[in-house]
Length: 535
Image (cartoon, rainbow, N blue to C red; front, side, top):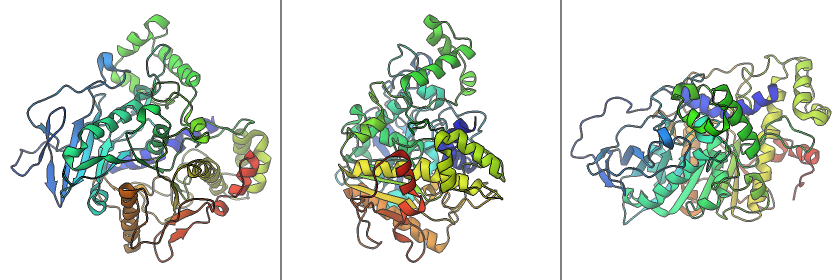
């Protein structure tokens, strides 16, 4: 079904782009023999040995929970078994299990609850730096924390960056009757990592009282979910959401105008889980969980798709979308934004190319039902390729419209900064090839302006490199103070009554007010769904 396919490819686009093409991260080889200069830091579980170079200290593969294997499969994270001798933390741990149908380079394991710390050498316990905890994207079925090399953000921004892994797909979000915290194990992992930060980060020179939770795509949606989670109270003090909030939706849209969301009703995920268990020969209700725990990792990895977080657990007691709209979230400063052309890269391979007018109209009818004629009138079909129009519809409705709704909800209660990453010549990830039309500022294109994926800086022009430095400055200042403003780059007003969205693009005049509402036809979508107009 095309509608459900749209949901899948949109949610996971950056996971495919970053992970399938980046290759093994720097340092994936054999562990080197320790040298006297290697820094050793004590944690509550035991000491860890990292590396130090170019003004940065790096620690990789630090366990923040026990391996979720055997009887611990589909349980809340358990405490780490302590150790006494320095643990080698100079190379990354295996990533969490991914689907074999989207092959990702590098080792994978169910034993994957590890995190990485990148800290300025100048940060120390008596002079702690702000902390950024980064949650990777990948549709909740892909992602690798170790790919996000944070040297520029940590060094130039004077922040400590932590990148944890979390369980994915069927391992992270299975939901069965009577299973505690079902449907949210991956989110539970993320909160356990935040508690590790609270309890240990001062030893690495980080300030546990100044933590910013940030993420992109599924990591951004996770961040929004934690903002509504009672059990996350006090674990972070600011939040950054890049391409995803609690309100993002994918078609098909029923009559009330709400589509699929990243946080599914418990019954929906339970139905998917029960059907999957039956397919695996585990259909007897009283025996389903022991039966599934007896299945091999490979058997379960074949069924990674169709699982995303659900609410109705201790981690997420209620629908995050409802909580956000009603103001039931942790009142901390937020930065929230999208890329200008979110959906352009995502539709590759999902719809015919070129997309003829009749097929275009059929897609709109399937996805928008009774509203299809109104959508077609606003985005009229052409005789040639309708792929660009189809991509624009999903950039506007799926991403920009829902992001504006989230910005409205946040700004009514907390300091809120909106942004649009708008570099339409953004570098492609290695191996990415543009198809029928340019990808522009595609989903995930902003990530390489903050992180060196796989340890390699993107092929920037001079103007793009300056934009990357300015973005690092904005993000770091927000982590320090809750306000991205400071000397140097153009000012960034709060979202406020004017609905200010900061455009982030290279070159003279590239940073300033975006024409966000006009670019994305938000007046049309507000009218269609009966939501608030311009204030």
